[in-house]
Image 1 (tube, rainbow, N blue to C red):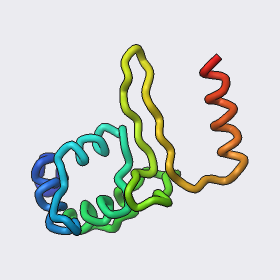
Image 2: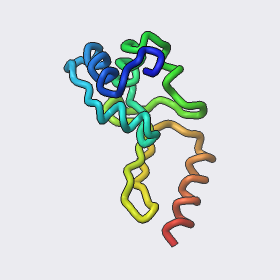
Image 3: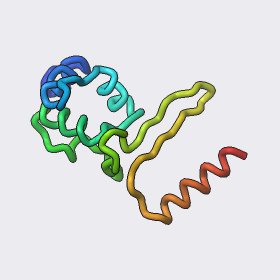
Image 4: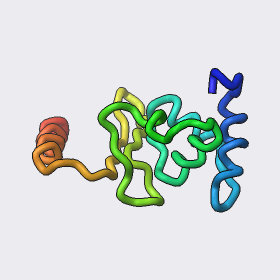
Length: 109
């Protein structure tokens, strides 16, 4: 985005051209830029095409694609008081899933 001199709205407008419904909201870019949500496969493709880069350049190390086209692989929504709503929608090894569940269990106590 910076290399092209674009702001979030510019990227959203450019990415919209590559969306099936021709819609891409600036808020989608904002959530990604603020590391609150990874783009789902369709939005990821649209942003990569708009930026003329490989999709893999937009995914942080260790992140994986969503198994559901309609849901982002990772989303965090601030709830206040230092808490967030965390949504994980991606394939992970079973041992990692168990560690996450264990961590979440210790948080809720």
